[in-house]
View (cartoon, rainbow, N blue to C red):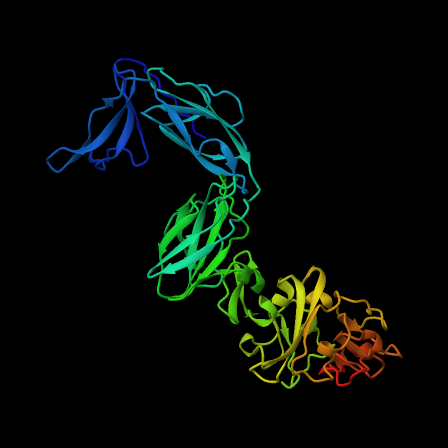
Length: 488
């Protein structure tokens, strides 16, 4: 770093130092109007300012040095001492109240006139530590030493909660829980995309700034915002930030459709229902975490509602999702087309993203309408995803005959077939059962009567007869969507 030193050698000496874009004459003696330079003029013993002016005849010149005498200079650091963001570096700017020299250190030692310095303003890349500085003018008048401590803060604040939205004409009123004690404020993003993006740590945003497919429409430390909304559907997310500008990992989201109500985006259909966001059975956006979202079907009426569709098995669609169809039962990926979720075999991202405390299986009519014939409900031992019930490969013979759930606690047989064992027989729900007497892999994915299943005589979902060691190979027999035999 270049160190600047000025000294008054005699009454006739004058030193000039240009500020960025300062008053400097070119070869023709002209300068840029309004540009300024610091100067120390003869006899003044203080720093002054020299400004480029128009002399009235079409020419510009640097006017004589105008001194600035009086009280000693003062300096301030922006931002002041406090937490640094997760990146560990922030730009700190030190400015003086009048033309002066700034001397500073970043290692905790006390600065002197021989320390690093600059004129009037300096920007420092500050890492965790202590910044000490003071300002002095050419007469020797100086202020006290300032001491600012900067501490690394890697912990993001907790997200805000209880986000709600209300549409009124062309305006939407958003409200959320008051930010926690470690939260300095929030920004609200508005966009039409399902995943509007996430703010970058250490960066400050203002209203109008773009982040991904969204725009910042509010920045402050309040718990409410009234905004003008667009006629199309809008998505609003609220990100909390701390004093170091670390942003919360997650942000609550509300989806507002033009002319309709605002629906808080939950991690499940039950969460949406719990905050009053239900608008009946249909498609909702679920929060996938870290700004991502996915479409899901919510049953908001059966058995009190709040059920998230995780999977549909359609035996008549011509596609096999028998035991060996690993992509359907065990892969963490969507299977099939969402817009054909009832007509064809389908697995939702909710199968591996949503943890539930209860499981509901519905027996429905064949075809796209999916009319419900009956249903059964099981409590889960602990919150888990539907994918967690299943494993790849063939399990040992009757090695998985332990109940995966509590006993079924609610059932509506409706118009289901007397042979519909899932709805009408047994009590517990079993997954990945192998009842083969030979060990060759007569397997089934879901059943309620595991112990009664025998060789080639299985009841439940997704069977595979004589799969054997080749079940993952080229000669794999995928099996049937629904086992054809009843074990009773």
